[in-house]
Image (cartoon, rainbow, N blue to C red; front, side, top):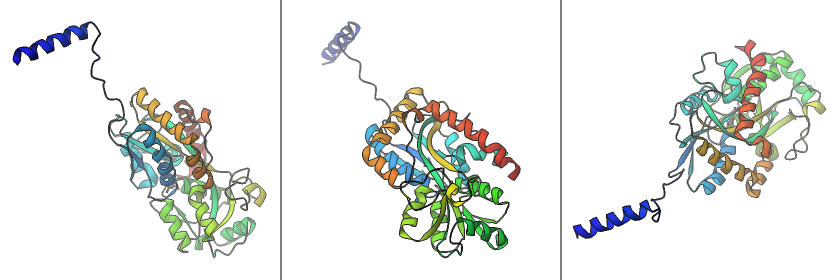
Length: 325
Ligand code: MLT
């Protein structure tokens, strides 16, 4: 028996040296489930975009993708955690314009740098911003809204998802245009902030379209305008800020996937290919478009394009937000 084993082993070595026996195939990434951190509460816009896209990516990659909602400090708590995670491709983050751009000027002691501490994977969605209010908020249109919030600033409260979140930064821009400083009410995400708006516990909010379309269509909140040059097909009756008389207020956020710095180029390429495939899938596209997202085209989906976007967005938001700190 020992002899046969030895003989078999010797034969295998001999055959392998002749190139006739293939070495055991190394298992390639991913061999187990992947986690993507979502830096806000479940049910909000980042969570919704991440869930739609990662469900398809999981099919392509042959492993499940778990969403972990880690809240706090406008998304920066979760983003710091992702920056410090092992760079083995098993912990990712679905961040956005706030966590990976606006946070830089707003948090002087930010414990990560969006450009230095992450490998960009892919831009997932553009998310236009809307000015929204509780259903019984008195102004009937954007002109009345402007007059009303200027006259009642001290009495009003604007919901947001923490300093540096998209909802915070977008309304900071709106407030600077209107030259007002209402009270901000922070939530762990605009999922819970939207619940408060629907319940009439807060007055208004600047939020991403993905979170707003279902509520606007259900008539549970008011939408004054969308802060983009064109109307969005998912909300054909909501005027643009240009049409409604506040053309200076232009704001569109974005969601994107990142891995910790040093994640191998092969893993980044594999994740990027899976994200791109998801963005080409008819069902994924239909769902994203129903919610008003802007789907990035092929040239916008590369890691290089995302690196450029992050750099440009930091440069864009720094002069706007620096004085607010
Ligand atoms: C969320 O997912 O709750 C939002 O992206 C929060 C925000 O940045 O406003």
